[in-house]
Image (cartoon, rainbow, N blue to C red):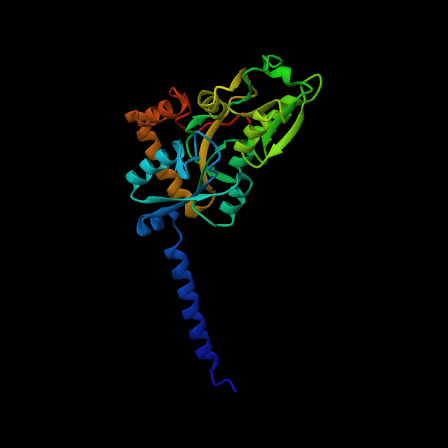
Length: 276
């Protein structure tokens, strides 16, 4: 038989509720939690050179150097989580980690769902081919050919829009990551791969068997990092934006862009409306 009186039960309920509210309040700010614990959990895909990739089993790329510098200035270390790109954004929404340094192409649709940082690189889409393939001299030459894209990416969407303008549509093959698409390009299973200019330009400089198809196509686009679009993440995004602004001013962002892309990039330093 239950001996608790109604008044006792109310007190217990009030105590439990107060504890729950207090716990939520203690974990209601991602930036404060990161500073308190000394760690910010960031997800990305380590098959996306030069932003994030593996070298002899070790993580490397602009994302690591840039976010390590941001963390140093804000008072936390970065804990990296390597996932296939198609699962990165769902994991962010599920609260499995705090932040995504994909980076991701900024689009109007994504801006309605996520909180983006300031852009960190140009993301305009282009094509990469085998260097000795003289049948592709400009983007329109992929008409009727086989083109690889990354599944779930905005770059894939940009190529599909471009593909609709061709006299004979290309056959599109989707890949889990950029590395797989380049392996199939080398093996002649596809004739070209569509991705953002920094990725394909870096790949061509590292592997002379590939060449970038000039010019790029589609609308101007930018890469940025992202968090959940909620009150808990707002201060984190604001602090990272302030830090990126400082890095614009002191030249450290341009230095990282030059190291990883070969030259600094002209990207917005304030709010902007994406064309995509």
